Image (cartoon, rainbow, N blue to C red; front, side, top):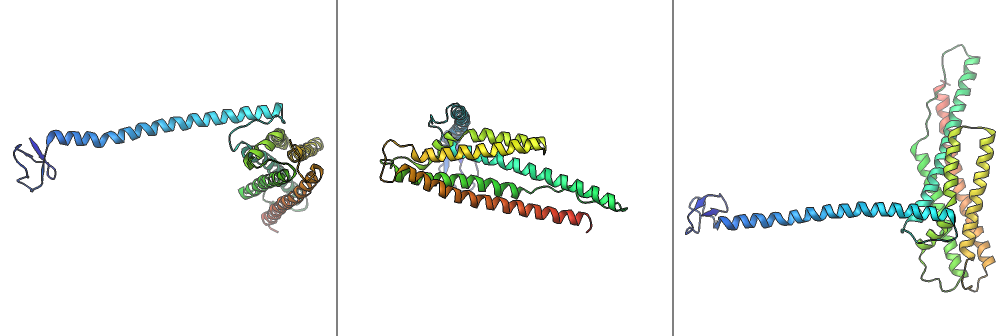
Length: 288
């Protein structure tokens, strides 16, 4: 039997064209083979997609395990830098910026809450009305994003400066890529990640004299470790070039200080804008 390709009517084998619509006839067996052939690539593609999905998941797990192993090794022996995934250094710098910013944000949030409570107490003591200041002020996501990106980009910029000076100080460094250099310096300074996590946890405990002293100590240690990593990233050479290491390190530190001051000014500006917004909200909430 033959099937019409248009109306699917059955005709005799000797019929070449459908008597109903005039379309060309095809053999029923050929129709089944064509259907099977058209379906088989889709099945094959589906199998490949499932396979690719499984491979991607496994690759992600391996990358996370590799990164965690790299972090542990960097905490044990910072100067024995190991090769790792391409973006391990960038991820480490981002996590450091994230936890440090979360700590700052929590301190600011606590300060605004304490200021609101104090204002309400003062208002209640000198007023017989039931009015009160707004105590539901919260920091916007823009505050966190701005500070995270500022700190992260400043860190990457300083490593970029160290990379350029490192090449000016040393010989035969043309094959070293910036991303590998960034991973190496992130390995040197990875203990900063532990300090920023500690900074965030202390910010959760509240504001006190002891916590403030600990915070100052943590920030001092972070700054010291970072400067040591940057300087060592410049002066650690197998073969020196015309520019002396001392001068190279001095130039690097001077430029990095400028970058730090710019980043600090952006952070302080963001804090000022947040405090200004808070006081505006405070006054409006109190009906003044």
